Image (cartoon, rainbow, N blue to C red; front, top):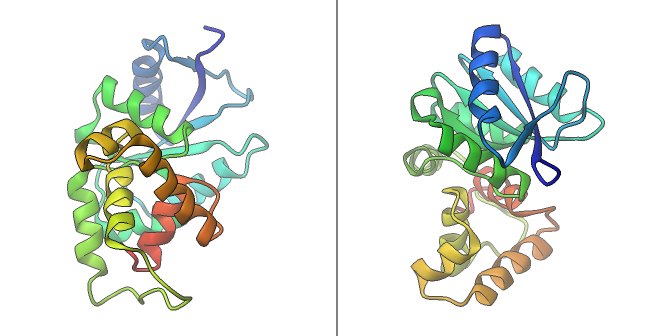
Length: 202
């Protein structure tokens, strides 16, 4: 268990909290943090993405350890997903999509700096952006290659998977992501996806 990822579960409903904790506790890759123990990732479970839910995300992110947040919501539409990403969420799941394996993979991806969501939610975000979000006006945007790589990152693909799908080398994918984060002064890949969505670059 020494190398297991420390994860906490935060929910307004104690039944949901217990269920998620039980699901995560069955994975050898995850170690559940005890109350008041630091965690690298926090799974936040809410019914809807409203102001109290976003406040809960912000409060969780402001803990001393500054955990990455995976948000699980009963309902989740594009506008709410955008608000969650802006609040610092690194993983988005609808409750109906959650399986033990998918939850663990999303948690591990968040810990690795990736921003993960389902492909259909990403498509909704991009459709919602059309004609609504203001395009980035701070200089050159993203190339087609950079946009394609970031879309796959947002779907939760690992570097090796992206390289296989696009017929690139792993080094090329890594270089593309590094160039994006350096050009826009971003912290990591999750920050890059969030920045691109908010700025209308994707």
